[in-house]
Amino acid sequence: MEHTFARLPALLHGSAIPTPVRAPRLVVLNRPLAEALGLEPGALEGTEGAEVFSGNRLPPGAAPLAQAYAGHQFGHFTALGDGRAILLGEQVTPRGERFDIQLKGAGPTPFSRRGDGRAALGPMLREYVISEAMASLGIPTTRSLAVVATGESVWRSRELPGAVLTRVAASHLRVGTFQWVAARRDAEALRELVNYALQRHDPELAAARPECPAQALLAAVIDRQAALVAQWMAVGFVHGVMNTDNVAISGETIDYGPCAFIDSYDPATVFSSIDRHGRYAYGRQPEIMHWNLTRLAEALLPLLDPDEAKAITRAEETLDRFEPAYQAAVLAGMRQKLGLFGDDSEDVDLIRELLDWMQRRRADYTQTWSDLTAGLAIKDVRRADQDFMHWHGRWQARLSRQPQTTAEVRRLQRAANPAFVPRNHLVEAALEAAEQGDLVPLERLVQVLQSPFDHDRDAPEYRTGAPDGGEGYQTFCGT
Ligand code: AMP
Ligand code: MG
Image (cartoon, rainbow, N blue to C red; front, side, top):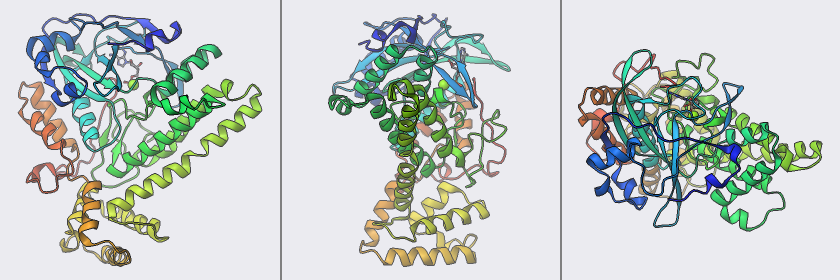
């Protein structure tokens, strides 16, 4: 293991070691991920895995620490830091890629405040299922290597079985990491952090020795996040807690607390029990990401120009990249979903008309797209109302204006529209069974979600939303 983060200025970390747990038991191990990391899955099974992934035994070369960061939580600035996560170090894969290996739920740290430093089994398995589903969907994300049940209880609103999740990330640098250093007004540490982030995530940019490294980093993060949010929107993913501490510099989706996939299409969809004003609603995600990136730009101001007015101009100019980058990415994504090649000035309107129809009819988002992929929707009499027929005619006319064959159109659509996403009711049922000791539904769900674009798979029960439409489904933070 390596420890480049640990060499950053001391204000960025605190010492922390995992607190041993009573009776660790390996619940899931992600074998393909272990192999990709250059680890030996066979050696991480059973008791050995339970010991290492619970934090009871540190792997060779581990040098644990907790990272410091701040964050705007629902708009309010707070000092945070890893309150229940402990970084063991960085694993360099056989392909030369560097990943943080972190234990989440491993016990108290200097940043735990009033928290117990622990996590419950259900939410850690939830992170495992959804983060791995995102990875299979081709969406940048932190990964889940293992979940270990601790044999101890945690107390939330009730007694729950405890667990530790091993999270793998390109890094855990967040917008909030920069906010933390900026709040300390330590320009030198900020400069070091910028250079470190560039080296780690944009080595080719760093090698080009940009005149203003902070601006180069800001632009790169903006581009990554614009592309990421466009991917979330395309699959109907609601992050749920887009606080600035949950926005990764790497461009990976991070923090799978209250996230969920939409069933029926509605931009106002909110699942998180604490998001009463819909700040992080599905349709607001692009706007909120822009707000979060503005906080990053603010943190970087001292490095953008010695003259504050000039620094602000530079920040604003750089932030102006977000909107066009997001619009271009979301339009490209939606075109793929419709099997459209090239661009036609009517495309934006064509997409809008379909989404409006879905919203009016409360149509299931994933199902509608996969029906359109299979060419079924027109046969479904329930859906084929006048508006739909009108839209369908426009879509077919647009398809006929492009030279590509039906097979090419179908191929494009099949690669863009998942047949399988983590359906809320299935995730809940799998977690409930796992808490009762039955891992079969969880393992089957994980397996189906590994091939989200396998449209030929015969697994109808995984394709549809909750039988009751999923009305009122709620998710939770701080679990
Ligand atoms: P999150 O909502 O997961 O982004 O967490 C926000 C902050 O609360 C982070 O600083 C976490 O480390 C901290 N936190 C969440 N749960 C706990 C816990 N059980 N014990 C200590 N800190 C926690
Ligand atoms: Mg977080």
